[in-house]
Length: 121
Image 1 (cartoon, rainbow, N blue to C red):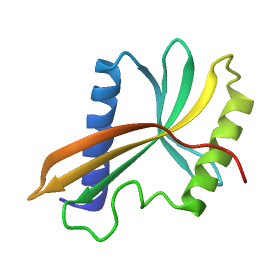
Image 2 (cartoon, helix red, strand yellow):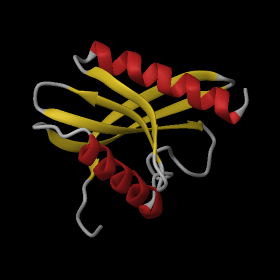
Image 3 (cartoon, helix red, strand yellow):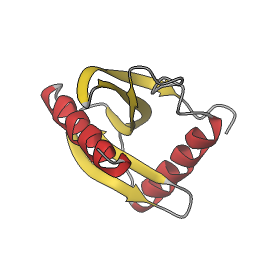
């Protein structure tokens, strides 16, 4: 499975799980000059900017660790631009949806709500 296939599979799984959890996915793969938002989902309280990360079980870096300071900065900047163009009364939140695979199969996933915030950015 190529990297883009893996990414699409991860985003599809994340969207399905989020919808089962009661969220509505309102956008996928939102691009700006600064970066990309994998998924944007809403519930009654939050507009969630969800970074989806897929890693093999034996990877040296976990999916959450792969979302470092530079990646977070790009996500935050892109989210701010999105909100300028699509105002919302909902509270923004930055989530990470981590997926672990082994032999091309999903062995686990976790929706980390409020994984990071805008402090320091």
